[in-house]
Length: 506
Image (cartoon, rainbow, N blue to C red; front, side):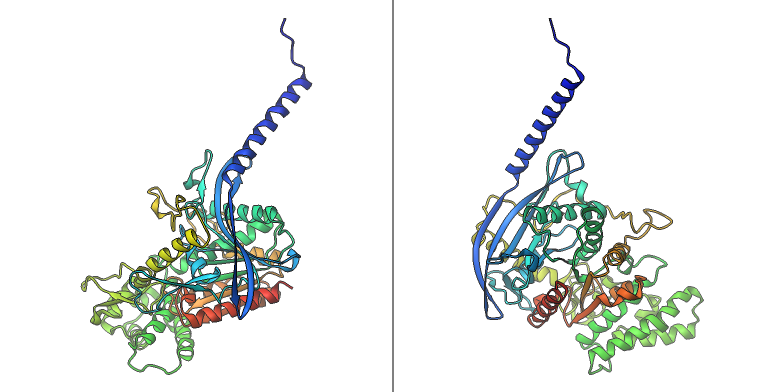
Protein backbone atom coordinates (compact mmCIF):
# COMPACT_ATOMS: atom_id res chain seq x y z
CA UNK A 1 0.00 0.00 0.00
CA UNK A 2 1.53 3.37 -1.11
CA UNK A 3 1.70 6.00 1.60
CA UNK A 4 0.46 9.51 0.84
CA UNK A 5 2.85 12.47 1.19
CA UNK A 6 1.77 15.17 3.60
CA UNK A 7 2.15 18.90 2.94
CA UNK A 8 5.03 18.97 5.40
CA UNK A 9 6.61 16.08 3.59
CA UNK A 10 6.30 17.84 0.26
CA UNK A 11 7.93 20.94 1.72
CA UNK A 12 10.78 18.86 3.17
CA UNK A 13 11.26 17.14 -0.20
CA UNK A 14 11.30 20.50 -2.00
CA UNK A 15 13.86 21.89 0.45
CA UNK A 16 16.02 18.78 0.10
CA UNK A 17 15.92 18.89 -3.70
CA UNK A 18 16.57 22.64 -3.72
CA UNK A 19 19.54 22.25 -1.39
CA UNK A 20 20.90 19.43 -3.55
CA UNK A 21 20.58 21.56 -6.68
CA UNK A 22 22.21 24.50 -4.90
CA UNK A 23 25.04 22.33 -3.63
CA UNK A 24 25.57 20.87 -7.11
CA UNK A 25 25.57 24.38 -8.60
CA UNK A 26 28.15 25.56 -6.08
CA UNK A 27 30.23 22.46 -6.72
CA UNK A 28 30.25 23.16 -10.46
CA UNK A 29 31.05 26.83 -9.80
CA UNK A 30 33.95 25.86 -7.56
CA UNK A 31 35.28 23.57 -10.29
CA UNK A 32 35.07 26.28 -12.96
CA UNK A 33 36.46 29.09 -10.79
CA UNK A 34 40.24 28.86 -10.68
CA UNK A 35 43.16 30.78 -9.19
CA UNK A 36 46.87 30.76 -9.92
CA UNK A 37 49.00 32.88 -7.59
CA UNK A 38 52.67 33.79 -7.97
CA UNK A 39 54.97 35.96 -5.84
CA UNK A 40 56.99 38.89 -7.20
CA UNK A 41 58.64 42.18 -6.28
CA UNK A 42 59.28 45.45 -8.07
CA UNK A 43 60.85 48.82 -7.36
CA UNK A 44 58.52 51.79 -7.84
CA UNK A 45 60.08 55.21 -7.19
CA UNK A 46 63.07 53.32 -5.73
CA UNK A 47 60.89 51.61 -3.12
CA UNK A 48 60.59 47.83 -3.08
CA UNK A 49 57.03 46.55 -3.45
CA UNK A 50 56.43 42.83 -2.87
CA UNK A 51 53.18 41.58 -4.34
CA UNK A 52 51.07 38.59 -5.27
CA UNK A 53 49.82 38.21 -8.83
CA UNK A 54 46.63 36.16 -9.10
CA UNK A 55 45.23 35.01 -12.43
CA UNK A 56 41.75 33.67 -11.82
CA UNK A 57 38.09 33.41 -12.72
CA UNK A 58 34.98 34.33 -10.77
CA UNK A 59 31.54 32.87 -11.41
CA UNK A 60 28.44 34.99 -11.99
CA UNK A 61 24.91 33.73 -11.32
CA UNK A 62 21.54 35.09 -12.34
CA UNK A 63 18.54 35.81 -10.13
CA UNK A 64 17.57 32.11 -10.32
CA UNK A 65 20.97 31.11 -8.93
CA UNK A 66 21.96 29.63 -12.29
CA UNK A 67 25.55 29.84 -13.53
CA UNK A 68 25.80 32.35 -16.37
CA UNK A 69 29.43 33.47 -16.79
CA UNK A 70 33.01 32.83 -15.81
CA UNK A 71 34.89 36.14 -15.65
CA UNK A 72 38.66 36.14 -15.94
CA UNK A 73 40.85 38.63 -14.12
CA UNK A 74 44.40 39.36 -13.03
CA UNK A 75 44.82 40.83 -9.55
CA UNK A 76 47.93 42.43 -8.11
CA UNK A 77 47.88 42.78 -4.34
CA UNK A 78 50.65 44.25 -2.23
CA UNK A 79 52.05 41.84 0.35
CA UNK A 80 52.21 42.73 4.02
CA UNK A 81 49.05 44.83 4.14
CA UNK A 82 47.05 43.87 7.23
CA UNK A 83 44.32 46.52 7.21
CA UNK A 84 42.24 46.47 4.03
CA UNK A 85 40.40 49.61 5.13
CA UNK A 86 43.61 51.52 4.45
CA UNK A 87 44.51 49.76 1.21
CA UNK A 88 42.64 50.96 -1.91
CA UNK A 89 41.70 48.58 -4.73
CA UNK A 90 41.33 49.73 -8.34
CA UNK A 91 39.21 47.81 -10.86
CA UNK A 92 40.43 48.41 -14.39
CA UNK A 93 39.41 47.51 -17.95
CA UNK A 94 39.71 48.65 -21.53
CA UNK A 95 36.92 49.42 -23.97
CA UNK A 96 36.12 48.56 -27.55
CA UNK A 97 33.49 47.50 -26.79
CA UNK A 98 34.88 44.00 -27.12
CA UNK A 99 38.46 44.57 -25.95
CA UNK A 100 40.33 42.70 -23.25
CA UNK A 101 42.22 44.58 -20.52
CA UNK A 102 45.57 43.76 -22.14
CA UNK A 103 46.28 47.35 -23.25
CA UNK A 104 46.05 49.04 -19.88
CA UNK A 105 47.49 45.93 -18.24
CA UNK A 106 50.69 45.93 -20.29
CA UNK A 107 50.82 49.65 -20.95
CA UNK A 108 50.54 51.32 -17.53
CA UNK A 109 48.62 49.44 -14.81
CA UNK A 110 50.50 46.18 -14.32
CA UNK A 111 53.93 45.83 -12.69
CA UNK A 112 55.48 44.90 -16.03
CA UNK A 113 55.32 47.13 -19.10
CA UNK A 114 56.02 46.73 -22.81
CA UNK A 115 58.27 49.44 -24.21
CA UNK A 116 57.36 50.90 -27.60
CA UNK A 117 59.12 53.50 -29.73
CA UNK A 118 56.33 56.02 -29.50
CA UNK A 119 55.50 57.46 -32.03
CA UNK A 120 58.07 55.77 -34.27
CA UNK A 121 57.59 52.38 -36.03
CA UNK A 122 58.20 49.35 -33.83
CA UNK A 123 58.37 46.46 -36.27
CA UNK A 124 58.53 42.75 -35.39
CA UNK A 125 59.87 40.97 -32.28
CA UNK A 126 61.86 40.96 -30.09
CA UNK A 127 60.11 43.49 -27.85
CA UNK A 128 61.34 44.89 -24.57
CA UNK A 129 59.39 44.31 -21.35
CA UNK A 130 60.58 46.04 -18.21
CA UNK A 131 59.55 46.72 -14.61
CA UNK A 132 56.85 49.37 -14.69
CA UNK A 133 57.92 52.29 -12.55
CA UNK A 134 54.64 53.98 -13.53
CA UNK A 135 52.34 51.36 -12.00
CA UNK A 136 50.02 52.51 -9.20
CA UNK A 137 50.65 49.25 -7.30
CA UNK A 138 52.52 51.19 -4.63
CA UNK A 139 49.33 53.08 -3.71
CA UNK A 140 46.55 50.65 -4.71
CA UNK A 141 45.89 47.00 -5.38
CA UNK A 142 44.87 46.43 -9.00
CA UNK A 143 42.30 44.09 -10.55
CA UNK A 144 42.35 43.87 -14.35
CA UNK A 145 38.97 42.64 -15.63
CA UNK A 146 38.23 40.96 -18.96
CA UNK A 147 34.55 41.26 -20.04
CA UNK A 148 32.74 38.23 -21.46
CA UNK A 149 34.22 37.11 -24.77
CA UNK A 150 37.64 38.56 -23.96
CA UNK A 151 40.56 37.09 -22.03
CA UNK A 152 39.38 33.87 -20.37
CA UNK A 153 35.86 35.19 -19.80
CA UNK A 154 33.01 33.17 -21.28
CA UNK A 155 29.31 32.58 -20.85
CA UNK A 156 28.56 29.25 -19.14
CA UNK A 157 25.52 27.12 -18.39
CA UNK A 158 22.56 28.02 -20.58
CA UNK A 159 23.82 31.57 -21.15
CA UNK A 160 25.46 32.72 -24.38
CA UNK A 161 28.23 35.23 -24.91
CA UNK A 162 25.89 37.47 -26.87
CA UNK A 163 23.72 37.83 -23.74
CA UNK A 164 26.48 40.03 -22.30
CA UNK A 165 27.30 42.06 -25.41
CA UNK A 166 25.38 45.25 -24.86
CA UNK A 167 25.49 48.46 -22.84
CA UNK A 168 23.18 47.36 -20.02
CA UNK A 169 24.21 43.68 -19.68
CA UNK A 170 27.87 44.70 -19.77
CA UNK A 171 27.37 47.24 -16.97
CA UNK A 172 25.48 44.63 -14.95
CA UNK A 173 28.01 41.80 -15.42
CA UNK A 174 31.06 43.95 -14.61
CA UNK A 175 29.25 45.30 -11.53
CA UNK A 176 28.41 41.73 -10.46
CA UNK A 177 32.04 40.73 -10.87
CA UNK A 178 33.23 43.64 -8.73
CA UNK A 179 30.71 42.81 -6.01
CA UNK A 180 31.74 39.13 -6.06
CA UNK A 181 35.44 40.00 -5.94
CA UNK A 182 34.89 42.42 -3.06
CA UNK A 183 32.97 39.76 -1.15
CA UNK A 184 35.34 36.86 -1.82
CA UNK A 185 38.45 38.86 -0.97
CA UNK A 186 37.02 40.75 2.03
CA UNK A 187 37.40 44.18 0.43
CA UNK A 188 34.04 45.60 1.53
CA UNK A 189 35.75 48.22 3.68
CA UNK A 190 38.52 49.10 1.21
CA UNK A 191 38.53 52.39 -0.73
CA UNK A 192 37.41 51.45 -4.25
CA UNK A 193 38.20 52.93 -7.66
CA UNK A 194 37.22 52.34 -11.26
CA UNK A 195 39.71 53.02 -14.05
CA UNK A 196 38.53 52.47 -17.60
CA UNK A 197 39.79 53.54 -21.00
CA UNK A 198 37.73 54.62 -24.02
CA UNK A 199 34.50 52.58 -24.01
CA UNK A 200 35.67 51.56 -20.55
CA UNK A 201 34.86 55.13 -19.44
CA UNK A 202 31.36 54.75 -20.89
CA UNK A 203 31.11 51.53 -18.85
CA UNK A 204 32.53 53.08 -15.67
CA UNK A 205 29.82 55.74 -15.51
CA UNK A 206 27.19 53.00 -15.57
CA UNK A 207 29.06 50.70 -13.20
CA UNK A 208 29.56 53.41 -10.56
CA UNK A 209 25.81 54.00 -10.59
CA UNK A 210 24.84 50.29 -10.73
CA UNK A 211 27.14 49.29 -7.87
CA UNK A 212 25.59 51.89 -5.63
CA UNK A 213 21.96 51.31 -6.54
CA UNK A 214 22.00 47.50 -6.59
CA UNK A 215 24.78 46.43 -4.22
CA UNK A 216 25.26 49.33 -1.86
CA UNK A 217 28.85 49.82 -3.01
CA UNK A 218 29.91 53.46 -3.23
CA UNK A 219 33.19 54.02 -5.03
CA UNK A 220 35.66 56.64 -3.85
CA UNK A 221 36.67 57.68 -7.32
CA UNK A 222 36.46 57.07 -11.05
CA UNK A 223 39.38 57.60 -13.45
CA UNK A 224 38.27 58.17 -17.04
CA UNK A 225 41.09 57.59 -19.55
CA UNK A 226 40.31 58.98 -23.02
CA UNK A 227 36.70 59.47 -22.14
CA UNK A 228 33.44 59.15 -24.04
CA UNK A 229 30.14 59.19 -22.17
CA UNK A 230 27.94 60.53 -24.97
CA UNK A 231 28.29 58.61 -28.25
CA UNK A 232 26.76 61.60 -30.03
CA UNK A 233 30.10 63.43 -29.71
CA UNK A 234 31.74 60.78 -31.94
CA UNK A 235 29.05 59.76 -34.37
CA UNK A 236 28.99 62.44 -37.10
CA UNK A 237 25.27 61.90 -37.47
CA UNK A 238 23.44 63.52 -40.42
CA UNK A 239 21.97 66.95 -39.54
CA UNK A 240 23.77 66.89 -36.16
CA UNK A 241 26.77 69.26 -36.09
CA UNK A 242 28.08 68.47 -32.58
CA UNK A 243 30.76 65.97 -33.70
CA UNK A 244 32.22 68.46 -36.19
CA UNK A 245 32.45 71.14 -33.49
CA UNK A 246 34.13 69.01 -30.82
CA UNK A 247 36.59 67.40 -33.25
CA UNK A 248 37.94 70.70 -34.58
CA UNK A 249 40.33 71.41 -31.65
CA UNK A 250 41.93 67.97 -32.11
CA UNK A 251 42.20 68.56 -35.87
CA UNK A 252 44.01 71.79 -35.02
CA UNK A 253 46.35 70.10 -32.51
CA UNK A 254 47.19 67.45 -35.11
CA UNK A 255 47.91 70.05 -37.81
CA UNK A 256 50.08 71.95 -35.33
CA UNK A 257 52.06 68.80 -34.54
CA UNK A 258 52.65 67.93 -38.21
CA UNK A 259 53.65 71.50 -39.10
CA UNK A 260 50.75 71.99 -41.52
CA UNK A 261 49.87 75.50 -40.37
CA UNK A 262 50.97 78.49 -42.41
CA UNK A 263 51.67 80.51 -39.28
CA UNK A 264 52.32 77.94 -36.57
CA UNK A 265 51.83 79.42 -33.07
CA UNK A 266 54.62 78.87 -30.56
CA UNK A 267 52.30 77.74 -27.77
CA UNK A 268 50.03 74.75 -28.35
CA UNK A 269 47.97 75.51 -25.23
CA UNK A 270 47.30 79.10 -26.25
CA UNK A 271 46.50 77.97 -29.78
CA UNK A 272 43.96 75.40 -28.58
CA UNK A 273 42.26 77.93 -26.32
CA UNK A 274 41.75 80.11 -29.37
CA UNK A 275 40.45 77.20 -31.45
CA UNK A 276 38.03 76.15 -28.69
CA UNK A 277 36.61 79.68 -28.60
CA UNK A 278 36.12 79.63 -32.37
CA UNK A 279 34.72 76.07 -32.43
CA UNK A 280 32.03 76.70 -29.83
CA UNK A 281 31.42 80.26 -30.99
CA UNK A 282 31.62 81.35 -34.63
CA UNK A 283 31.94 77.85 -36.06
CA UNK A 284 29.06 76.36 -34.05
CA UNK A 285 26.85 79.34 -34.89
CA UNK A 286 27.64 79.01 -38.59
CA UNK A 287 26.90 75.28 -38.70
CA UNK A 288 23.64 75.71 -36.82
CA UNK A 289 22.42 78.07 -39.55
CA UNK A 290 22.61 75.19 -42.02
CA UNK A 291 21.60 76.18 -45.56
CA UNK A 292 20.70 79.67 -44.35
CA UNK A 293 24.41 80.49 -43.92
CA UNK A 294 25.30 83.26 -46.38
CA UNK A 295 28.18 82.92 -48.84
CA UNK A 296 29.97 85.78 -47.13
CA UNK A 297 29.73 84.05 -43.75
CA UNK A 298 30.74 80.72 -45.25
CA UNK A 299 33.81 82.27 -46.86
CA UNK A 300 34.87 83.84 -43.56
CA UNK A 301 34.48 80.57 -41.64
CA UNK A 302 36.36 78.63 -44.33
CA UNK A 303 39.31 81.02 -44.04
CA UNK A 304 39.45 80.42 -40.29
CA UNK A 305 39.26 76.64 -40.78
CA UNK A 306 42.19 76.79 -43.20
CA UNK A 307 44.27 78.75 -40.70
CA UNK A 308 43.49 76.27 -37.91
CA UNK A 309 43.91 73.00 -39.83
CA UNK A 310 46.04 73.59 -42.92
CA UNK A 311 43.48 71.85 -45.12
CA UNK A 312 42.78 73.73 -48.35
CA UNK A 313 39.95 76.24 -48.60
CA UNK A 314 38.53 74.46 -51.63
CA UNK A 315 38.41 71.24 -49.58
CA UNK A 316 36.54 72.89 -46.72
CA UNK A 317 34.08 74.52 -49.09
CA UNK A 318 33.37 71.26 -50.92
CA UNK A 319 32.84 69.61 -47.54
CA UNK A 320 30.30 72.31 -46.65
CA UNK A 321 32.55 73.21 -43.70
CA UNK A 322 32.09 69.71 -42.24
CA UNK A 323 34.97 67.21 -42.36
CA UNK A 324 34.63 63.84 -40.63
CA UNK A 325 37.60 62.27 -38.88
CA UNK A 326 38.55 59.64 -41.52
CA UNK A 327 38.49 62.39 -44.17
CA UNK A 328 40.76 64.60 -42.07
CA UNK A 329 43.21 61.75 -41.40
CA UNK A 330 43.42 61.02 -45.12
CA UNK A 331 43.62 64.63 -46.35
CA UNK A 332 46.05 66.22 -43.89
CA UNK A 333 49.16 64.37 -45.18
CA UNK A 334 47.94 63.57 -48.69
CA UNK A 335 50.92 65.18 -50.41
CA UNK A 336 53.32 62.89 -48.51
CA UNK A 337 51.46 59.66 -49.39
CA UNK A 338 50.78 59.15 -45.70
CA UNK A 339 47.78 59.20 -43.37
CA UNK A 340 47.47 60.48 -39.80
CA UNK A 341 46.51 58.16 -36.95
CA UNK A 342 43.10 58.00 -35.30
CA UNK A 343 43.97 56.73 -31.82
CA UNK A 344 47.06 58.90 -31.86
CA UNK A 345 47.32 61.48 -34.63
CA UNK A 346 51.08 61.89 -34.10
CA UNK A 347 51.47 58.54 -35.85
CA UNK A 348 51.82 58.38 -39.63
CA UNK A 349 51.14 55.42 -41.90
CA UNK A 350 51.47 54.66 -45.58
CA UNK A 351 48.46 55.68 -47.65
CA UNK A 352 47.73 52.72 -49.91
CA UNK A 353 45.22 54.60 -52.04
CA UNK A 354 46.08 58.19 -52.93
CA UNK A 355 42.61 58.68 -54.42
CA UNK A 356 40.79 57.55 -51.29
CA UNK A 357 38.56 60.03 -49.50
CA UNK A 358 38.87 58.22 -46.16
CA UNK A 359 41.65 56.69 -44.06
CA UNK A 360 40.39 53.18 -43.39
CA UNK A 361 43.18 51.93 -41.12
CA UNK A 362 44.87 53.34 -38.05
CA UNK A 363 48.69 53.60 -38.12
CA UNK A 364 49.05 53.55 -34.34
CA UNK A 365 46.91 50.46 -33.86
CA UNK A 366 48.68 48.64 -36.68
CA UNK A 367 52.07 49.53 -35.27
CA UNK A 368 51.79 48.74 -31.55
CA UNK A 369 49.33 45.81 -31.57
CA UNK A 370 51.96 43.14 -32.36
CA UNK A 371 54.20 44.46 -29.57
CA UNK A 372 51.41 44.46 -26.98
CA UNK A 373 50.01 41.07 -27.94
CA UNK A 374 53.39 39.33 -28.14
CA UNK A 375 54.71 40.86 -24.93
CA UNK A 376 51.50 40.17 -23.00
CA UNK A 377 51.15 36.53 -24.07
CA UNK A 378 54.79 35.84 -23.27
CA UNK A 379 54.45 37.54 -19.88
CA UNK A 380 51.29 35.62 -19.04
CA UNK A 381 52.69 32.18 -19.78
CA UNK A 382 56.23 32.69 -18.44
CA UNK A 383 56.20 35.11 -15.51
CA UNK A 384 52.62 34.48 -14.34
CA UNK A 385 52.80 30.73 -15.18
CA UNK A 386 49.44 30.57 -16.97
CA UNK A 387 48.94 27.21 -18.70
CA UNK A 388 49.62 27.44 -22.42
CA UNK A 389 46.46 25.49 -23.26
CA UNK A 390 44.35 28.41 -22.04
CA UNK A 391 42.90 30.49 -24.88
CA UNK A 392 43.19 34.19 -24.07
CA UNK A 393 41.16 36.38 -26.45
CA UNK A 394 42.62 39.85 -26.83
CA UNK A 395 39.20 40.83 -28.17
CA UNK A 396 35.70 39.42 -28.61
CA UNK A 397 35.95 40.15 -32.32
CA UNK A 398 37.12 36.57 -32.87
CA UNK A 399 33.51 35.45 -32.42
CA UNK A 400 31.52 35.57 -35.69
CA UNK A 401 28.35 36.56 -33.83
CA UNK A 402 29.93 39.48 -31.97
CA UNK A 403 27.55 42.41 -32.16
CA UNK A 404 26.95 45.15 -29.61
CA UNK A 405 23.48 46.16 -28.40
CA UNK A 406 23.66 49.91 -27.85
CA UNK A 407 20.34 50.30 -26.03
CA UNK A 408 20.71 51.92 -22.62
CA UNK A 409 17.77 52.32 -20.29
CA UNK A 410 18.88 55.35 -18.28
CA UNK A 411 19.71 57.47 -21.37
CA UNK A 412 16.33 56.86 -22.96
CA UNK A 413 14.57 60.09 -23.85
CA UNK A 414 11.10 60.56 -25.21
CA UNK A 415 11.94 58.24 -28.11
CA UNK A 416 13.21 55.34 -26.03
CA UNK A 417 15.80 53.13 -27.70
CA UNK A 418 16.10 55.61 -30.58
CA UNK A 419 18.09 57.90 -28.27
CA UNK A 420 21.85 58.07 -28.79
CA UNK A 421 23.62 55.98 -26.08
CA UNK A 422 24.79 58.15 -23.22
CA UNK A 423 25.97 57.19 -19.72
CA UNK A 424 26.46 60.77 -18.58
CA UNK A 425 23.08 60.54 -16.76
CA UNK A 426 24.43 57.48 -14.89
CA UNK A 427 27.48 59.40 -13.75
CA UNK A 428 25.38 62.39 -12.74
CA UNK A 429 23.15 60.14 -10.64
CA UNK A 430 26.12 58.38 -9.05
CA UNK A 431 27.77 61.70 -8.18
CA UNK A 432 24.53 63.14 -6.83
CA UNK A 433 23.79 60.18 -4.56
CA UNK A 434 27.45 59.86 -3.54
CA UNK A 435 28.62 63.49 -3.36
CA UNK A 436 32.05 62.52 -2.03
CA UNK A 437 32.92 60.53 -5.15
CA UNK A 438 35.72 62.16 -7.16
CA UNK A 439 36.25 62.06 -10.93
CA UNK A 440 39.62 62.29 -12.71
CA UNK A 441 39.48 62.74 -16.49
CA UNK A 442 42.65 62.12 -18.52
CA UNK A 443 42.75 63.50 -22.07
CA UNK A 444 45.19 63.07 -24.95
CA UNK A 445 45.49 66.19 -27.10
CA UNK A 446 46.20 64.07 -30.19
CA UNK A 447 43.33 61.64 -29.66
CA UNK A 448 40.99 61.58 -32.68
CA UNK A 449 39.07 58.59 -31.30
CA UNK A 450 37.68 60.39 -28.23
CA UNK A 451 38.43 64.10 -28.79
CA UNK A 452 39.07 66.12 -25.63
CA UNK A 453 36.63 68.89 -26.58
CA UNK A 454 33.86 66.28 -26.75
CA UNK A 455 34.66 65.28 -23.19
CA UNK A 456 34.68 68.91 -22.10
CA UNK A 457 31.31 69.46 -23.77
CA UNK A 458 29.82 66.41 -22.01
CA UNK A 459 30.98 67.47 -18.55
CA UNK A 460 29.88 71.05 -19.16
CA UNK A 461 26.38 69.70 -19.83
CA UNK A 462 26.01 67.24 -16.93
CA UNK A 463 23.82 69.72 -15.06
CA UNK A 464 25.53 68.95 -11.75
CA UNK A 465 24.66 70.64 -8.49
CA UNK A 466 27.18 73.43 -7.83
CA UNK A 467 28.31 71.71 -4.64
CA UNK A 468 29.84 68.77 -6.52
CA UNK A 469 31.16 70.36 -9.72
CA UNK A 470 34.60 70.69 -8.14
CA UNK A 471 34.70 66.91 -7.70
CA UNK A 472 35.81 66.72 -11.35
CA UNK A 473 39.46 67.20 -12.35
CA UNK A 474 40.67 67.37 -15.96
CA UNK A 475 44.24 66.55 -17.02
CA UNK A 476 45.80 66.83 -20.49
CA UNK A 477 48.77 65.13 -22.12
CA UNK A 478 50.59 65.86 -25.38
CA UNK A 479 49.94 62.32 -26.53
CA UNK A 480 47.09 60.26 -27.95
CA UNK A 481 44.35 57.85 -26.86
CA UNK A 482 46.86 55.59 -25.06
CA UNK A 483 48.81 58.52 -23.68
CA UNK A 484 50.78 56.25 -21.35
CA UNK A 485 52.87 54.67 -24.13
CA UNK A 486 54.80 57.95 -24.24
CA UNK A 487 57.24 57.82 -21.31
CA UNK A 488 56.83 61.45 -20.26
CA UNK A 489 53.03 61.08 -20.35
CA UNK A 490 53.26 57.78 -18.44
CA UNK A 491 55.15 59.52 -15.66
CA UNK A 492 52.52 62.28 -15.51
CA UNK A 493 49.73 59.65 -15.67
CA UNK A 494 51.19 57.84 -12.66
CA UNK A 495 51.61 61.07 -10.70
CA UNK A 496 48.07 62.25 -11.45
CA UNK A 497 46.35 58.93 -10.68
CA UNK A 498 48.44 58.20 -7.57
CA UNK A 499 47.69 61.65 -6.12
CA UNK A 500 44.01 61.25 -6.97
CA UNK A 501 43.78 57.92 -5.13
CA UNK A 502 45.88 59.02 -2.18
CA UNK A 503 43.89 62.20 -1.53
CA UNK A 504 40.41 60.78 -2.15
CA UNK A 505 40.85 57.59 -0.10
CA UNK A 506 41.34 59.41 3.20
